[in-house]
Length: 364
Ligand code: BG6
Image (cartoon, rainbow, N blue to C red; front, side):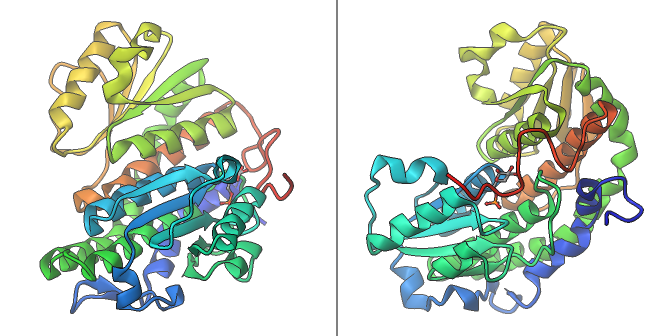
C-alpha cells in the first residue's frame, strides 16, 4: 500500500534521503578515501587489469549508466560508455577480456539486460551487476556485483532505485580510481561528498511545493525539450524519459551544444525547454544557449545552482544544492522526478502504472 501517499511514485521519491543511505552503508572508507565493494569479488589486481568499462541497461537504467560511465572515466581515467542492453547482442559485439561489463537493473529480470549478460559471459567476458532485487535472474547470472538496497520499488517510473544506481556507480568509480591514479585527497573529497548527499536530497525534496506550479505549466505543453551538456546530458535524457513515461507528453532530450544544429527550429512560445545548468566549466556556454531560446520566446525552466547568474534570461529557475561536481548529476535529477510527477498528477494519469508500460519487461 502506498499508505498516506497518493501514489507509490511519490512515496518512493520521498524515501530517497533514507534509501540512498542504504547503498552507501558500510562501503565508504574515510581513512583511505575509497570504497569497499566485497560483492564485486575482484581484488586490487583484478581492478587494475580493467582497461575499459561497458555499461548495459534499459530505459532509466541505461541513462543512469551514462551518468556512471562519465563518473568512471573521470575518476578512474578508464574509457567507459553505456549502451542500451536491448541493442547490444544484436550487433554481435566484440567481447574483450580486459573490459569490465556492468549490467544495471532495478528488477534484475529485464530480459534484454539478462540476454546481454549471457552474451558477455558466453564469450568469456566478466560481467558484474548493479541490481536492486536480491537473488534476481541478472544478479545470479553475473560474476559479482553491488546490491542497491533501495527497498522494493513499485512505481513503473524508477526513482529511488535510479538514485542508488548512481551512487553504486560512484562507489565503483571511486574504488577503480583509488586502485589507480585518483589521489587520496580526491578520494576523501568524494567520500565526504557522498556522505553529504542524502541530506542534500532531502533539501531538494523540501522545495517540492515550489515546483508544483511550473510542473502544471509544463503539463500543458504538447512537446518539450530537456537539455544538458556532458555530465548534464544523461540527466536531461532521464528527465525527458520520466516526463514522457507518465505525462504522455512528447519530451525530447538534446545536448545543449546540438541545439543550434537542428532543434532550435522548433523553439517557440508553445515549446518549453527544461535546461540543466550546473555551476561548472560549461556554465557560460550553457547560458549562451539559454539566450538563443529566450530570443525565440521559448519558455525556460532552468535547474541550476544558486551561484549561477542567469543575467537577462527570462526563466523559471530551480536551485539545487551543490556537492562535488562529479556527484552533482543526481541532485539535478531529483527536481526532474518531481516535475514529471506533478505534471502527470495534474493531467489525472495513473502515475504508478502508465499506459503500455510494465515495471519489468521479462519477455522479448
Ligand atoms: C522498463 C521500465 O521497461 O524497464 C523502466 O518501464 C525501467 O522504468 C526499465 O527503467 C529497466 O528496468 P530494470 O528493472 O531493468 O531496471
